[in-house]
Length: 409
Image (cartoon, rainbow, N blue to C red; front, side, top):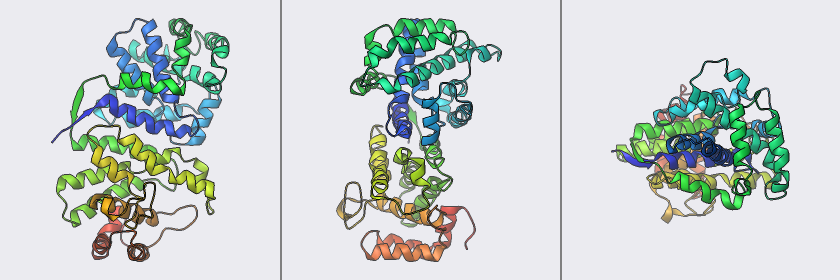
């Protein structure tokens, strides 16, 4: 049965996840979207075009998972390696029909105007892509001035953009930017105390479109691939969790529809990890207290992202509670057995099983029987559900294959 989901709200939620990559600068995508639509209004674009710019601006960096890559994109006006994340973002979006129309804008959003004019692209693609590029670079120039000396810095930002008219940016787009940005409100709306109010009005617009579970799984796969790309050690972690969660749901006799939702929750359970710096995930030694605290935020962030999407309330909870324990000693909410549904318990077990099956910078991957022993010890401590661990024990080969997609060892 289709789930009624507003695609603007889906895009907005996905942008919340992408913005986490900035760690300390968490509104880049939103600022780019807001700049782009204000410039679009100066160009006289219609509302449908502004909606497209809004979505493209929010998702323009969907190919970025690494905090290192984000840092380079913000620090350098014309980073030579920028095209890689454009290519990846294009590949992600073109696979999901409801958002595929945005893929070309993502592909060319770091291409200079003088190069775009030789590619014989549709005018709309060239114009919208270049406008996203202009807004992206303007935000890079403004990034260090928000909440401080923003209005004083505006003339220098405008001059820097104008300097690239005809080379990086189409002259009419530069003119539109200079026209829109002469208003103080253009800049003040970008600061953190105001930006959510402005953008949520846009996010609430648009028609509610029905989406079935297969399409929702496609969307969740986009989410998961962005997260899992953060580290070579977590590649396909979310996919493995999703497969194992669905298997355990089936073994537990849960309805097929619920098992499909478990698969989706598994794909999206680690969204909040996008805020964890690369060097923490790849650290080959024990984490410091500060680094452990950074990790401990991630499931809370997952919930904050997913709960914004009406229709995903159950999935949001199952995904976000994967570090809660039956004895109430988990995090971040310290829920106990009374508040943890069987679906949340399934995701918790699938997450631990798959993580132990993967090689990590601080340890080798564990074989299936060692993983089972670890799970049983956690069940004895009232951290995991013993009845579900018994299902793992009775189906260890199937669980290993689901988690790793490799033969039993």
